[in-house]
Image (cartoon, rainbow, N blue to C red; front, side, top):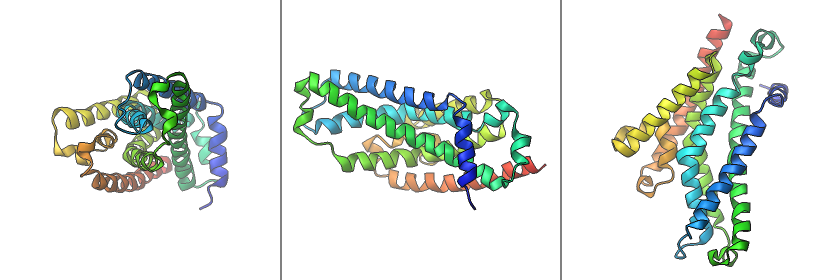
Length: 251
């Protein structure tokens, strides 16, 4: 299955939307704001200051920012064809349904990874600038814990992966923009309710709880299994989503 041409086509479509600006602006603005807030509270000197800053950054990212971005991007990108009324044109092009489906899915994952990369990059740059102005942070006395950053980044992506696929399928199959967004936010609030208010074990199997679980040490023991469940759900939902998409577009 050659996805080179479909991927190029999907990238060209996104250039005519505000998605790129949306991802970049939110990543830069929110990361800088959170770094400023964390640094103003003087992270503990008992740990590597970089680790202290990025620990709080990952909490804000996983609890609020990334779920919201995933819900919005997962709806905006698949909705391009509905907005431009170009589904018939796309389906009569020399592309198979599976090429259309997976090229759209991969473009969405590209946007999520881009957002995650920009958020962390801007967090690091903002920390450097603040560290130069506030020597009491001792940022230049220690090097960042690259292993912590890598592990946290992978864990964050795996935690949000199943949600991104569910939102992708909703955005791809619903014509109305409001439907997928409203569904996503309701499920996200339900995930937080199960985790923080009800303390239910169901949160271990509910995809919209995984992102928050990734950043709290008390869930560390159960999280390796949560990662496996997230990946398993992702594969399952991606396959079922394709079958549903193929039936809808072939009918």
